[in-house]
Amino acid sequence: MSNEYSIAVLLPTRSRTMSLTDSVTSIVCQASDPSRLQILIGLDNDDTVGLEHFDAVIQPYLDDNAIDYHAQAFDSMGYAGLNRYYNHLAQHADADWLFVWNDDAVMDTKGWDDVVRSYTGQFKLLKVHTHNDHPYSIFPIVPRAWYEQFGHLSRHQMIDAELSQMAFVLDVMQVIDVDVTHNQVELTKDSTDPLKPKTRFEGNPNHARDFHNPRVQQQRYTDVAQLASYMQSLGMDTSWWESIKSGKQDPWTRLRELDINKQMSQFEMQVDSSGRVLNVIAEPKR
Image (cartoon, rainbow, N blue to C red; front, side, top):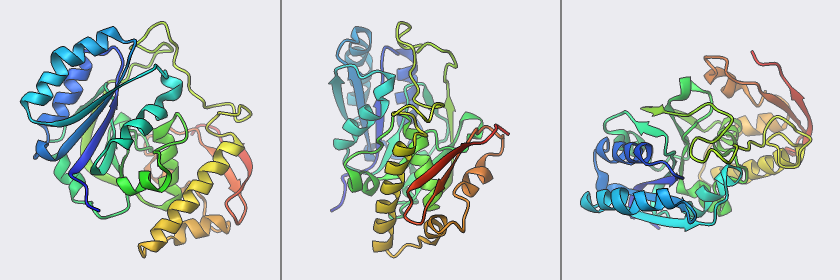
């Protein structure tokens, strides 16, 4: 079954006006063929500023440029529920690729959509250049088939980390020649809602929702195994994953190869032959 559009841009937003406008216009203006884009925007139904800005600025802009879009208002799920916004928006996507995008990001590369389309038909996670070239794909672009395998994009709030780690152990991470500026505010408070601190479930593996909690990791490895089965059905090579399961391959070799600026403090996962996590070891930041 073919999709109507090439790329669906998934964009949750809250209370940002100028940065949201810059983000959306950069995606459209830098595209070679905006008619093949679909933009899906998630707003909070208690965000008066954001809703009014969408009605007054964003919606007219998309209409004037004949861009297909879908806007959805949610009961606020906060930063702790970030993945849930993306999961819900992905339900409405009708595109070959799903692009996890932010309202503080600006597309810099002209013809970025041509670059993405050049990989259509390949089961890869596409990684743009941004964020001081963090080894993770900060704005992951995945084939719709990834979503279809589970009915969601990510089980965990840290969607970029979740998708990236799965891509590394499957050896499907693909760096592409696309540049993005990420205007992230490195503060303890969320700049879009100063009254709500950002909650990140990372750094305490004993917490049930932590990214490195053994049960959370076990589910991630179970999902990886499902993706590996799908890849095998396509005739793709999954020997990298098989070597990880048998203990012959370090799971994080590919991550370390991309960690050119030594930004990662990685939790090492020890798994058995079935992919079940046996232990979590914190490595010092290098």
